Length: 155
Image (cartoon, rainbow, N blue to C red; front, side, top):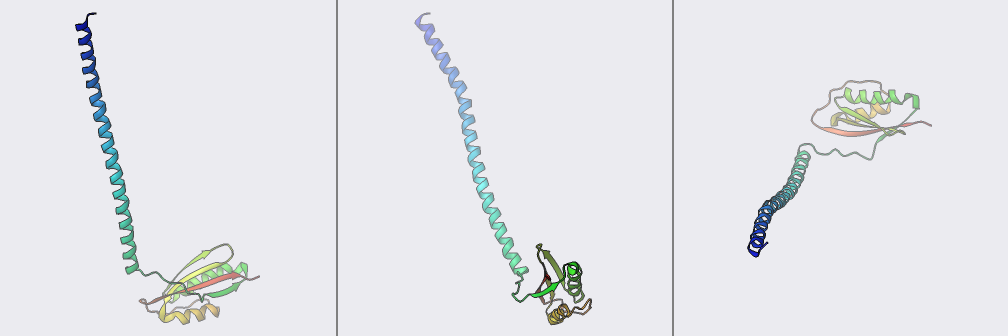
């Protein structure tokens, strides 16, 4: 091979390498740009989600204030076999005066959170403490008060 043919071969190889490296460089540059856009979009979405959550919490606090549970819960000692019937009795009393009730059993005791009308609060407390089975009373539907009733198994 003479020197002219060798030079042509080297120039051809350089042109082929340049032609191959150009798409590879464009591919790498495009991938890098897409990765940066993805990271920026993810950061922006996280900030947007956090702002949306905080806004929803503020709106919920304005519309539905968090009820506070009082320390003076009504505690009743009940025989273990009567626990379910006592739970149903307290829930029935809360519904009877225009309120609502929810219960939670932790395995040792049952906590009832009753949301009763403020005007019938003392009536509800007296009925729970005096073993009234059922009652119906008209209560003010605007003002509600949270009352805790704790049912503990008698030993």
